[in-house]
Amino acid sequence: MDEAQACPCRRGEAFGGCCGPVLAGERSAATAEALMRARYTAFAVGDIEYLLRSWHPRTRPKTLELDPDQRWLFLEIVRTERGGPFDDTGTVEFIAHYTCGGDPRIPRAAGPRSAAGGRRGSLHEVSTFTRVDGAWVYLDGVIEP
Image 1 (cartoon, helix red, strand yellow):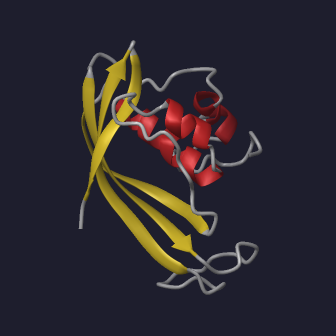
Image 2 (cartoon, helix red, strand yellow):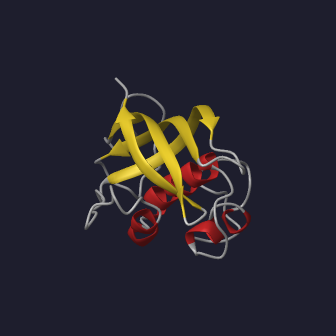
């Protein structure tokens, strides 16, 4: 991804000043929310290595496959509990919006289906984060209806 492009996490910064350095291992996420945003961005850009690296060793899968037809559209942070720079645990509730299927070369349109015929959907999760050796990692999550 181009460093000057808007970061997929939609925090309002360019990728190179937002989640890019976290994905590249140049800096750690300072908060649980920052890690959530970086993980969303990793899903959006297909960075499986970062997703696995930022997962708690106890709950991390051995492998991870991403759906090549799924396009992540935007992230909404609903709420956070703890997860600050001086906390050891934190919770982030989020809704991640996506499209699945259709032609990825055609821009997506609003509504239940994109202009390319893709199905729109969302993932609503309450995620738990903790620290391992001082770094935030994703522990687990509960999918909300």
